[in-house]
Length: 258
Ligand SMILES: [Zn+2]
Image 1 (cartoon, rainbow, N blue to C red):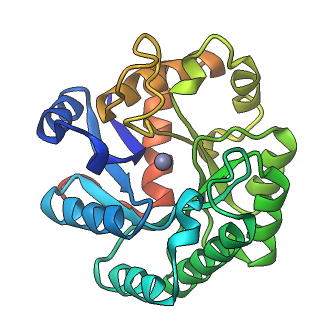
Image 2 (cartoon, protein in one colour):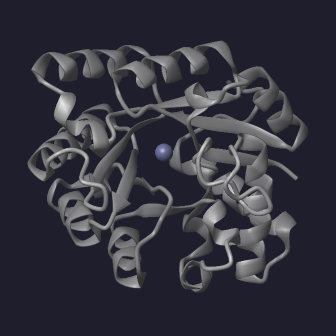
Image 3 (cartoon, helix red, strand yellow):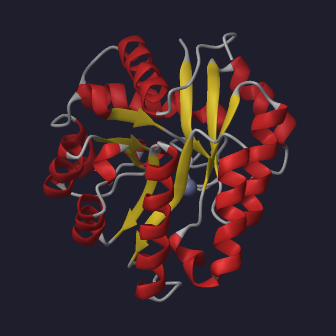
């Protein structure tokens, strides 16, 4: 089986070479590594340039929205224009932890939607306890023109319908394997299968049986198995499907064609 890890933070992994080797061994043929601020976006661009199977998404996480001034944005935008990322983000709203003031989160999100539209790139969106407003901002700023993914989807069916209507896909993490994730397992069955991506969000959210331990791209195979179980479909089929979905959303080349 072949997999794509559609959301990893490779710059946060302590033993990157080992993790990339383990990913290859597990059949993970491509990885999208995600920037959360200027520094990690630079690291993501560098990793993508160094490894043919790695692709970068550049952005500013809502947790850090407050630290961006005009100069910060100009550097981020210049990096995005010259380093050919496959997406913009992760960006979005986090009203659960509220680590940056909400007006700063909204401004950073809007700015990144505008950048994605300018560059014609999909968005990697983070939403935690901000379902209505995330969907409203995506609609209001016409983000459906580029689409993308709501990563680590934690919303309900109402949000899923809204963002699916805008053309977005939903990212499924190792959470799908957790005992208490029954609502998510029920929700994925109601989503068109061509809109489901799998991701690790490593080093966070390791699937069972590694819950609570550091996550890595190789474990996306386990998340795929968990999704297949929830969908009651063969894991081979779900692997092929989610790989095709991620390749389409991020316009990734087939391995070897890059
Ligand atoms: Zn993330």
